[in-house]
Length: 122
Picture 1: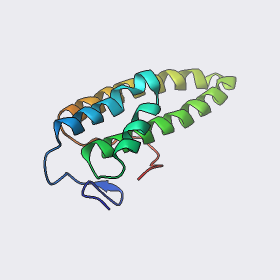
Picture 2: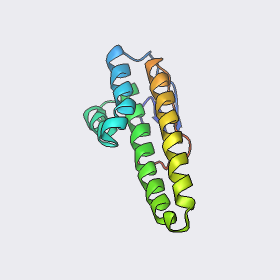
Picture 3: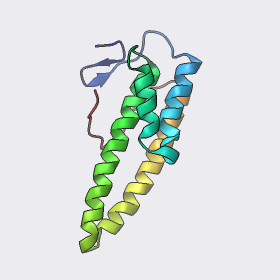
């Protein structure tokens, strides 16, 4: 276990995150608007060997994006009975807002956990 993630809880780091860590964390969130889960995956793979602020944000963002893929797939299936359309609109709006909140938290050097997220990567 690293200094940031012990079990299922995230603990604050012993030192403040560097500017590079903040930048990588911001990119792990905001670039999901352009390339989806690829951005947090790249950050995660580049930082996975050392515990860092950016690594924890990349894990959170990646888990959220993978969860969204599942939720949107279920919504697509539910479009047959029309409730899926409303679900897709709500998911899109929720995802947009939560990514912005996570990006702001990362810029401020704070940890953030997305709600409604399946923790695939711990």
